[in-house]
Image (tube, rainbow, N blue to C red; front, side):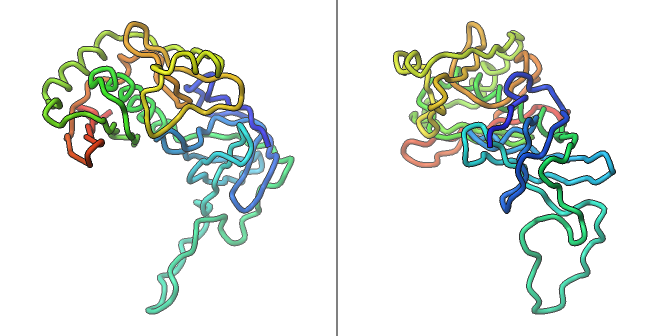
Length: 263
């Protein structure tokens, strides 16, 4: 079922009211959500679904559903449930995460407050936007990438001898210090086809089928397709450092970055 993706228009929304429209073995679907589903190297959001009667369903992951713009909120064990006793020697370990025994499940039609773990999300927004800037410092085809709350990396199809950690770090921070606003831009599938140079990633292609493609624009720095969540201004990223540069194969030279200081 289709979900209204509130994070797409405002990545700074921390919560929203929503109605449950489906409950199945993969998780819970809502009519609207602030939870970003895993994709493009960015992990899915975690958080809580809260019902007015006090029921709290922890969400341990968010995934794309089977339909376009459908989002599945993956529930975990209720935090109020008693911890299980240690398993006896030889006993089977815990199974997959799911609602704790005795916890009333959410039902279709229930109204909830959907709230994300904001600190985790905001950290990943900073990292994600930073990777876009990094792709303008290391000018080469991007063969892979990954985002975490404290670090991120891009893999490039480039000669290892051309990657200098000190130079990359200096140029990256210089661009961040320009404090340029980010902007969401939409173009049609046909417009993207006419501008193939906009697609830097070889491993992840822009989602198609809806008739239009979302771009992230950093004026004077970068413009490329992206469906993820980003900061409003690149100055919000803060200072970063190159953690390491590693050879991951003939076409995969990995540059990993992280925050220069916590917070």
